[in-house]
Length: 246
Ligand SMILES: [Zn+2]
Image (cartoon, rainbow, N blue to C red; front, top):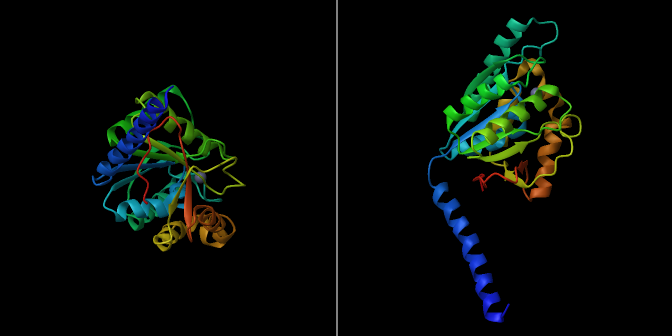
């Protein structure tokens, strides 16, 4: 290749990348729909509550889709009663974060990944028409978290790979494993709203252990990302780049 051709191809590369940037910029001025999915009430809040608050604060629509109502999550309490308590907590948390809660109808501790459920989750996601999807990371010690990740990925894949797709982490080291972030969101300005949304899950006693797990993660991801507090994400390589709060 001659020098002139090299320069030409280099210039084309720059134009191509700046046109992607221009597209992102144009879209960022529009109202977006964000869908955050999680297995249980409290997973989306602890994993990306600060980011949810940033989106809603910027005027975007955020829906939180819970796979279950946390039926098995209160020791000594029956499924029906626990579901009622935890549904109420999830609704209160979403109100604090400025999001709309939705429940998919599976049962905590007994989640299923079947063709039928893949289709159901696919149709819920299709009807929400999100621009960006967030879900749990599939390598996780909790079976329900893995189920959530698989079904949401399946919905994205068979839905035509239309949305930007990001994974979030929860209790990394004891639940999420092998998570190497590609993106960081500064949540220093929304951290208090995130804490309020997490602590409203009183049945889970999150406040008592927060500093030992999610609190440490927010600080560490902040150190990595160059912020006081941050949440970290892995973008699915095949998905388009989403607009994360800058
Ligand atoms: Zn969970």
